Image (cartoon, rainbow, N blue to C red; front, side):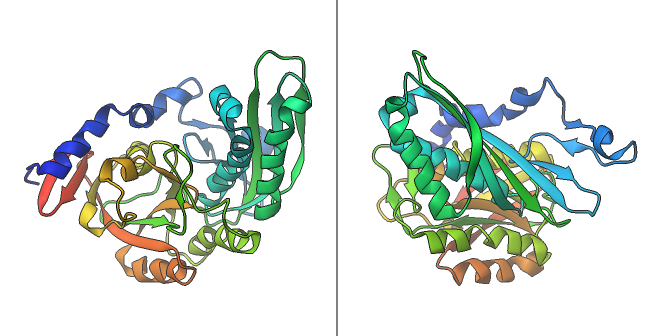
Amino acid sequence: MPITCNNILSNIEKLRTHPHIVDKKHIRETYSAIGDEVSSSAYFGKNSSPIKIGDDAAAIPQEDGSHLLLAAEGIVTYFLEKDPWFAGYSAIMVNISDICSMGGLPIAVTDTLYAKNAEDTELIWEGMRTASERYGVPIVGGHTCYHNDYKALSVSILGKASQHLLTSFDACVGDELLIVIDHNGSYYKEYPFWNASTNTNGKRLQKLIQLPYEVANRGWSTCAKDISMGGIIGTLLMLMNTSNIGIHLNLDKLTKPQGIDWNKWLVSFPSYGYIISCKPTFRQNIQKLFQQHNIQCDPIGSIIDDRELFITHKKDTLKF
């Protein structure tokens, strides 16, 4: 693939040192202590399938072929102090995205919350309760500890999936790459967060979280990831790591909000955003499903065997 570099690509190249992208590029280091998979033999016996590590949620196989899904997210203290309501809301929302990206449906969440006193947690709880009610995913327990000099919050989620999973391990050379984002929103304050959630009614949110489940169970894809911190670029790098593949991203095919520059959009974290890899024959089916719900679904590239990320804009290409 010929490598050239126009002005936009030269600017995007600077994202290589963005801290969120650097974190995602080295994501494997975060779970190196337990390896790439763990045995489930204690649960189902010696012939059971291992549980792979490194996906958006752990997929725990059940005897009937279905899966339990388990995930957790922690919220940094700075975020809790600066914007406690939104931090609480986000803790629920991002966990739900992790379950949905696996082709699953969320069941319930639990939380662990540290703070000075009950009054210090009111806005956090208000944000968590709001997200729980809008998405229809109950908070069923957890652990609260007062008399601390700092705030800390983590949320765990349980979900379920059929035998048809979406994972980040199954992108194959020749697949088309789709990016799914709800553009019906705007940036939340100064954060690199595209918010199409807090301003949306619960009925719509509850319908949207079912769409990846439909993709999986109609057999249109076996591979997806939610777009997380690090944005589109960081998430693509994680997908390359887990599937051991390369990616060609064509910016000319990717829709971004008007007036937003590429560097901001490519590292933004959308409230509803997924990367889906699929066979070319299923691309139109997936697009139609999301478009029926006014969700943007762009075919933005392909899976390649060269384990590099190539970014193209107006016929010029950059190796990221």
